[in-house]
Amino acid sequence: MTKLLCKPCAVDLAARGKTVKPVAQRCEKITCSECGRRRFGITYEVTGRATRKKEVTKK
Ligand SMILES: [Zn+2]
View: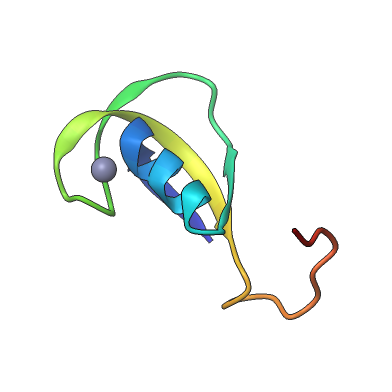
């Protein structure tokens, strides 16, 4: 799914095992869907094992 995230939240999601891929390259003023704050951020494609069963990379 795609999410609007600020940088700290994107880093946090990645640290929790999600795959966070930037979709847009430009930073915009967004409302972060994780922390709910108005900050600068971009659209990310967030995938994790909750949505897909097939995992290609495993740590
Ligand atoms: Zn955030």
